[in-house]
Length: 169
Image (tube, rainbow, N blue to C red; front, side, top):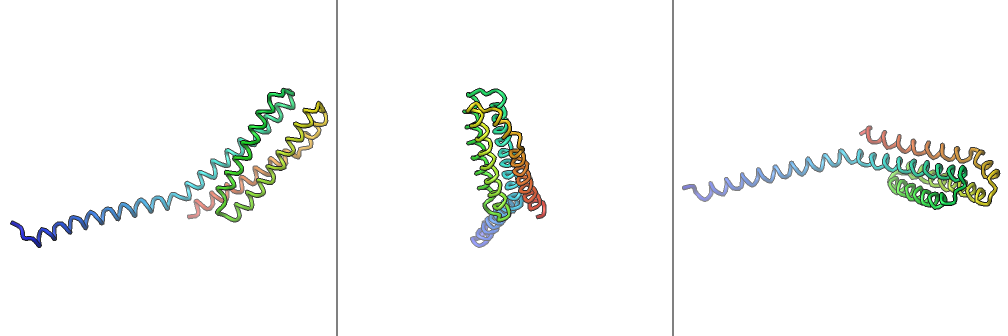
């Protein structure tokens, strides 16, 4: 029969080994999470970037569809697309709240989207008033393409910042 002190030492050794294993497992999980966190943020930013682009292009397509067809049922689709665009830009900006450079770019994107939507609204309002020629002239000024190009450039800048930050670690 084992003595009491031998039994205590064996139990302490057993529990110590278990505790050490749990600590190592916890550290491994924390380390993996810390190492993968930048990739997770980059994935969120890239996903939101894609959603902003999709909403932007969808709004433009619906605007063009209305100019081509004059179909009033398209207006409700345009309103939904416009709301979706603003929502996606807000979500994108919210994700960028932790980086000062990205915040500045996000504010510029918000401003450009506001100008873009105002221009599209003006075009659609003009076309609804049966002044299609003036609406098409507004459309042909290329102002909206300039807004779209600048928005896409800014989105590319943010994507570059995120990619550089993630892979620089």
